[in-house]
Image (tube, rainbow over all chains, first blue to last red; front, side):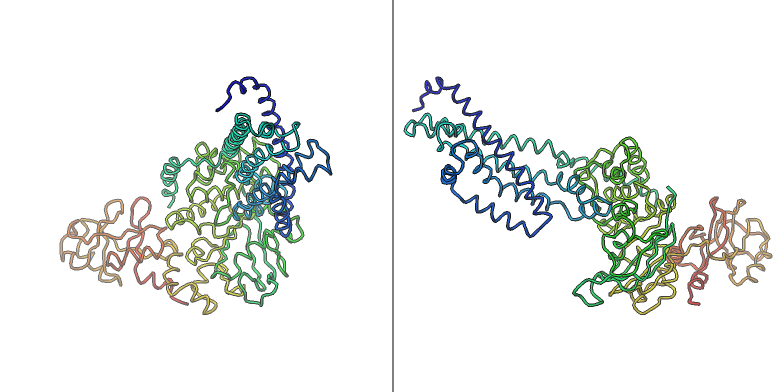
Length: 230
Length: 375
C-alpha cells in the first residue's frame, strides 16, 4: 500500500518541505508571540481591554483557515505574507489568554511583597510576574505550535510554493503514499515541537522541582536552634 | 545594625469612598508616637483598621487626611519607591519569590538598591545566620523546599536586608502552628535585642500583643484607638469596657506573665544550718510572721523547710525530717509561672535561688497577689 520506492526517490524533496514547514511555522509563532505579548501586557494594565482583545482574537480564530488563505489573495497576492497573516492571527487568542493567565497566576502575597519592598511596576513585571508566568506562557507556546504546524499544511492550497509538508497532501489527492508522508510528517513535527517546549519549560523553571525528601529533614533539624532559645 | 527611627501618626484618617464611618478597614483620627527602637503592637478585632494603619506607613495605602512621620520626615513627601526600600515589610503569607533562591530573596532590596553581587551575597549570608538558618544549607534552596517556619524566617531576613530603621510586620506569625509561632516570637524578641529596630507589629491576638509589645495600641471597629500604652498599663487599667473585654477576664493572670520575680521585694528567708541550736532556732521562727526555717547547706543551698513541729525542743537541728524545698524559682521566672508552681506544689512560699543554687529570698502567694492588686 505504501510506495516505499517513491519515498526513497523523494527524500531530498521531503527534507526541503520539512524545512519549509518549520520555517513557516516558526515565523508565525515568533511574530504571533511578539504581538500577543504586547496585547497581553496592555490587557493586564488596562483590564477593560482584555475582553475586547480576547473577543476579537477569538472571532478571528473561528474563521476557517482555507477560507482565510483564499480571501487574502486579492489583497496581498500570493506570497509568504499571505501564508503568515492567517497563521499569526490564529495564534493570538492562544497566546494572549496564556500570558495574561500566567501573570494572573502570580500569588497576591508575592505581588504585595514586591510592592512593599519598593519594586517599580516595570521591575515587578520583569523580575517577578513574567518569570513566574513562564510555565503558562510555555503552555501557550505548546498549544500554538501544535495548532500552527497543522495549519501550515493547509497553506498548500495557495499553490506549490507553499504548504510545507502539506504540499504532498495537495499534490496528488489520489496517491496514498504522498498523503501519508504529508500527514505523518506534520503530526510528527507537531509532537516533536510539543515535547521540545515541555523540556524547555523544565529548564527555565528549576524552582518548580520540589525537593520533597529534603524538606522533611530540614524542618526537623532546624527545630533545634530555636528550641534552645526558649 | 543600629539605626532606628521613631514613627509618628498625626491625626491619621482613612475613609473608603461610598462607605460610612465605622466600616471595615477604616481608620479614624489616629495619633500615636512610637519611639525609635521600640516594638509597638497594633491589636484589635478584624476590621478595626490595624492593617490599614500599618500599610499607610509604607504608603501601600494613602491616608485620607493626617500625616505620618518616619524620623522627622512626612512619608507623603518622600518618593514612594525610595520610602518602601527603606522600610522592612513582613506579611503573614511571607510572599517569598518562588523563582528565586533563599539568598536571592533575602538580597531583594539590596539588588534594587544596586549593591554589587559579592556584597549582596555576603549580606544574605549574614542575615540568614542572624535568623538562625545556616547559609551553607539554605542559601541555594528555593522557597518550595522550606517549612512554614523557615519561610517566615527568610521573610524576616529579607525585610532586614538593607538595614531599615523601621520594620512593619503584618500578622507575621499568623499562618504557622502554635509551637512554631511561640518559637518565632521568642527568636524575634531575641533578635530585637540585637538590632533594636522600630517595629510596628499587627496582630489580632492579645496574648501575642502583650508578649511582643513595648507598647500596645488597642484598636476597635471604626478605626478608633481605644488605648495606647505599655502592656502592663493596658492590663492594669483598661481605658474602657471594650478594652477590658478585649484583653479578657483573665487580664490579672496576663499581668502576672509580664512581671518577673526580680521585680518583687523578696523577703529574706530565716535560714538555719544543721547543727544549729534548736531552742534558739525555734525562738527565731516563732517571732516571724512566716514561721518556717529554711535549712541550707554550707554554701547556702536550700535543703528543706522546718516548721516548729520538725524542730526539736532541745539539742541541735538535724538534716533529716525536713519538708522538701520546692518549688525553686529564679529571678527571671514570671509571676504567672511562680504562682502556678506554688499552686502545683500546694505550698505558700517558693525559694528564689541564684545561679549557684544558693537561696536569696522567698516569694509567697501573698506577695504575688499584693504586686498586682489594683492601686
